[in-house]
Each structure stands twice: as C-alpha cells, then as structure tokens.
Image (cartoon, rainbow, N blue to C red):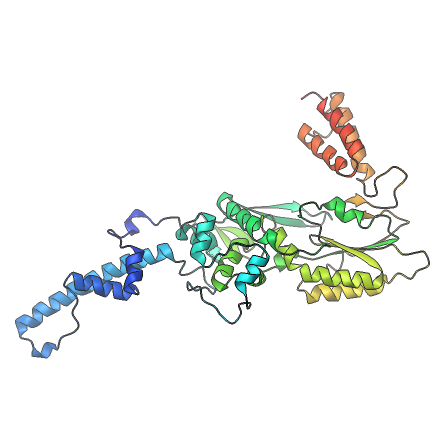
Length: 443
C-alpha cells in the first residue's frame, strides 16, 4: 500500500527498457534474454575447457563473466517490465496467479452468467485495470494486502451505536479507492439479483417502504444481525464474484478491492503503522458493501420469507435489521417462540449470527417502530408509517427558536432542512409546511 507506490523511484528503473510485446514474442523472459545475448555475441552454449589452452581458457572465462553480468542486467529489465504488466503478488496469505485460466471451481457458463446480469466481460486482470482506468502497478498498490502497513486506503472513525452502547467503526475509502469501488458497485454488484424483501440501499426503496410493510400489525418481531459487515470476509466476497461469472484471477482482485482488515494504529520508530486486528471483510462506509450484502443475503431472504409465510408473518430486511409482523385476526395463535428459534437457526446456517440481546417483540398495545418510523395503526388522516412525534416537536421548536433569535441547540439551516426532508418522506404536506417555514428564516 503506502510502500508500493504508483511508479518506482527513478534510481530503481532500469535504463533502455524492452517492450513487453518483444518478450512475449520470444516466448518467455529466459528466451528473450538468450536471444539478446546471442544478438550481442555473448551467448555461449558451453565449452569443454579442458580442450582449451591457458590463453583460450582465460579469454573464455572473461567472456562468460561478461555474459553473466549482461544476463543479470537483462533479467532485471525484463522483470521490471513484467511487473508493469502483471500483479505477480498481492500479499502474504492471499493466493493469486497471473494466468487467467479455468479451474474446477468455475461455474459451467461464466459468459452466460455475466450476460444474464448484464455485467462487463473482464476476461483477465488487464481488462479489469483498463476498465478501472488504472495501470497495473497502481492496481497492485490498491489491492496489496499487508498485516502491518505504514499507510491505509481508508479514513476511519467511530460513531455511537443507536442503542447507546458501544461504537461502530466507519471506514470510508480515500478518493482513489472510492472511485474504483464506485465503478464496481455501478457496473457489477448493483446488477446482481436481490430478493424482494430487501429494502436497504436500493433504488425506489427506503426506511419508509420497509416500515410500511408492517404498519398496523398486531405483533412485530425485530432481529439484529451481529457484526453484519465484518462477518462477510474476503472468501465470501470472492465466491460472490465467481458466482457472478468471473474467473479466479479477476474475482480475487475484485474481492481485494472491496475488503479490508480492521486495523489499529500504533507508532513504531516515530511512524504510524496500521496493524490488522482481524481478517479482511466488508468495510462499513465503502460504496460496494451494501450491494454486496444485499445479493449475498438473497438465499437468506428467500428462506426467511418462506418461514414468515408458513407462520403467518410478513418479512423484510433493511441491511442488518430483520423485521417480521403478524396481521392475522384476533384470537389467532401467534407463533412468536417458534419464529424466534427458526430465525436464529436459518441466519446461522447462512453464515450470520443473530444478536442475542437485540431481539424485540412489539405488540399493538405499545409503540411499534420499524427502521425509526412509528407503524402503530394510524389515526384518520395520518400516514401509516410516520416520523415519531418527538422528532416533529424538536423540529418545530428549533424553527421557533431560530425565528425568535434564540440559540436553541445550534442547528444549522441545512440540518433543519434535513429534518424537514425526513418528515416530508412520510408526510409530504407536513414536510412542505416545515420547509416553507425554514426557507423564510434569516440565514
């Protein structure tokens, strides 16, 4: 990463570099070197020196010494050029080879699978690098894995969890990697199939569409998947790209671009070092992570939808929040216990873990919230899923304070507009009224 820069230092670049096309035409590096030595008149097939005179033997040894020197120089140039056209190595512990061949783990029809999902061909890593607008050394710089590194491709910070207990690590990619991940999301992972029960990070779906499914329920049961993104490790991401229609070589590089280790920053010798504290997994904050988890959960969503239908529930998933609701008639037995046990087993079978302390059962007699919105049976004229009254009161008070010149909580106009937009999502008339009041406030 930080030590594998875009181009080597000038002193490390051999002069008079050959063209890779010439090396390929020769067959391989050794054949090209032998051909160059022959052209220079230095290649010696081998001589029985016992038949030579002392003078001839001395001249022969001098020529062989010159040959060895020139061979070393030619090999250094050839290998430098090779590294400009091949990744060669992508880090300790990551299996990779530069030959885009077919192996027994490939699905039968790679091209057909890509076409089915309208994915780019990407026959090999060169095609991938070209599509990403990267030279091979730059691509190597982005994917190279180290357990301890002096640099990182991510900005990291923590935010409090919604529960108020603990913090959540956010890893946002720096510009170079963010651009690459955005291309992968836009051209590959967002084209992969997603179940209809998924509502997070999808066009036309939102926390509102997720909550509406459960409005007016007699009982709502919510589950939380523990360590959702960290559970999706490199091996699973690579398997997803292989299943999408890419071979071993390209799938490995794509998976490396979309994953990173959680790291701890320490200082050694006066320099910061970033030490891996776990395996490579999906970073929360990367553009690719939501779409990868959505398609990885396709089978999970299908199984939980089937379970919900069997027990008389409705099911949706928003990222790591699993929600079930029962809308049957009064007097009908609600199999909450059976549902809870089955969900834990299915989620575990699909490679995730239900957080044991975050399952909630909400009945119609108390407040029912789904993805932050209230979904109890709505009064006449109210939306079926709505922003909690506390949020509306806070927005109304903030607008009043601002109009009266009072400091309030110090919300900016942009923050107030964001709150109004949130209300507008559920109740357009009320949200528009708030927005009009905000726009009339002094800057």
